Length: 413
Image 1 (cartoon, rainbow, N blue to C red):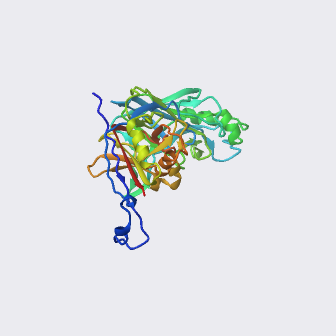
Image 2 (image 1 turned 45 degrees about the horizontal axis):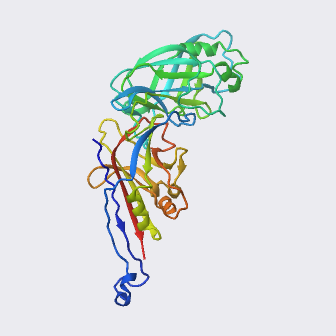
Image 3 (image 1 turned 135 degrees about the horizontal axis):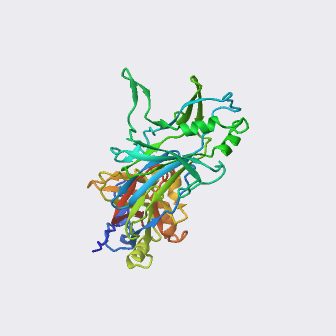
């Protein structure tokens, strides 16, 4: 059975005076000119919420790279992997005559940061993750745009299984000597590089034509998505050769790196969700033909709009964290609301608890709403989605209740 959403309008009309805040002069002011303070609540519904699939998102500009797979009771199976170029740490590389490989070690630095996301993983890391590593057989270009649903032509060279340890630091005598790393042998890659000619090893333009890069993807459902910082200097391939020599290939900011996402998209369209990893955004439709909407416009038209808040409420999610912050945009083309340009401290969208301990996302849409009232903007659908800078760097998902709350404070004379 469909539950009728509760849409509350708190309309407060108040007066600002430049004189002393007493009632001086009110005894001679005509009653019709006095300011009336009102509080109006209604259960009339002109909002409807639904989910819209994100087919793909651009991921070559990501700051974190995701690896893993989990099965969600609502969203189905989700998988994440990434591709990265390997870049020479110096030009005109010469490994000498007939170099002998001792080993080659791939290292990926787990994300370590205090801002969102606030952990280096999402889900349950207690199960082993199986991954496949492939060598890319095409050239990636830094001036090209790459998206989450793109896969590169590659040849699988190894399989590896490991227990994720994203919070395990390396210690020596009680001192931290190393941040968490995923490391494993990749001797075939090392040998392929040692076999390169002097022309192929002269610079990174020639080298990335010889070796397009590596692609790493999950091959089982282990229950977690891991976050890696490939721009960290510890993310690299180290080749050990000729007993005592080493050479590093890096994945820093100059390397092309791309996140790849697989999402089953099994959520019904009338469900109310937002999901990262090219999952879903939530459409907020406003019925301008409803009597309650027309009545609201009649009430506030000609007034000074002081503050307008639009609040959405999330269902509890104890095991799979919700988004720390979301944003609200106009239309599917993601046009920003004017209020956003006042800064996120003003615009809002942060996950918070209200006085009843309900999870809430609150947006200040005062400028946007004022333009609609004044007919400077058409009434459009709004879309609740991930922050542009966060949509490819976490695996979070948020499920919403049917409740939408609109709070309007305005001055009428």
